[in-house]
Length: 113
Length: 113
Figure (cartoon, rainbow over the protein chains, first blue to last red):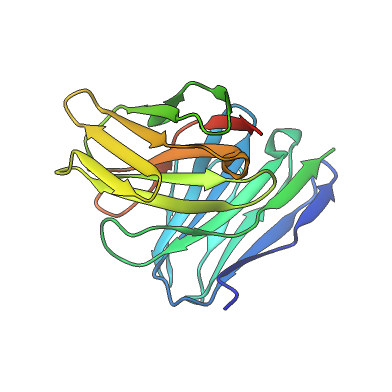
């Protein structure tokens, strides 16, 4: 059982380039989340989705876009990467309902130079 | 600004000692969860406590919740070197209509053999 899989695991981008991070889950979860983790900042919610075809903004959405065309996939896009987007990105998913735990992927380390 | 903040930011103890870390949050919640993150890995769910609960146990873990003070504590008893990790609290704020986990800044725990 793969759980939550993120690709790629590492990436270096030049300022202004674009890229898409892919998150895939095989647990039939309704909810999916994208977080970024920076030193001393903990995890901050970028965008999230409560079901196929729906997305919503989190705490730090600027500079990112997301899509949830299929229930099992949640894509995070950077249209024009900036050095401030250098971070470790985590995807997570969970079942519907209050009080369910989130399952995390292993993270994508992105460096923008 | 983030919903939760852990205290202390870093904690170093010897094996066999107890480790206590605290989490404070800002708004009313449905539940509070604790997660663990080993270096370079994704987060793993440890325990959940609902807003109408005051204390919960799971193995060597004990979690308390004081909604009047908007705070929670995680106690790890008889710590082991393998408990070395970062620990995060995550809240499900009531102000949102959907489940949305907001994480704190984390406590880095170092357990020396």
